[in-house]
Amino acid sequence: MKVAGPLLQHMAKSKKSLFRRISNWLHLWLGLFSGIVVFVVCLTAAIWTFRDEFVLFLTPGQYVEQSDSPF
Image (tube, helix red, strand yellow):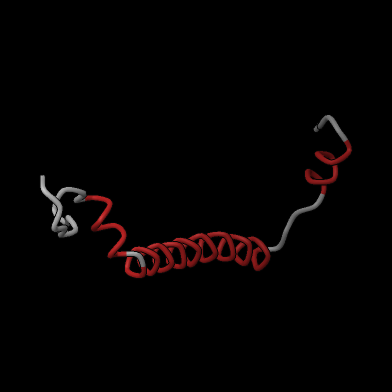
């Protein structure tokens, strides 16, 4: 089998063990899943922290300061 490039030749020659392939697969998918969970938790915490600012931004006409000056 002819493979171009030294890196590809090395990869073609070396066969990874079943344990290594399963470990790599688990590391990839568990890392992606836990990263998504952390992202969602951080996003909801930020929204909860700044909820008053979000309400004021999304409904600008509802909250008006009272003043005694003529209209």
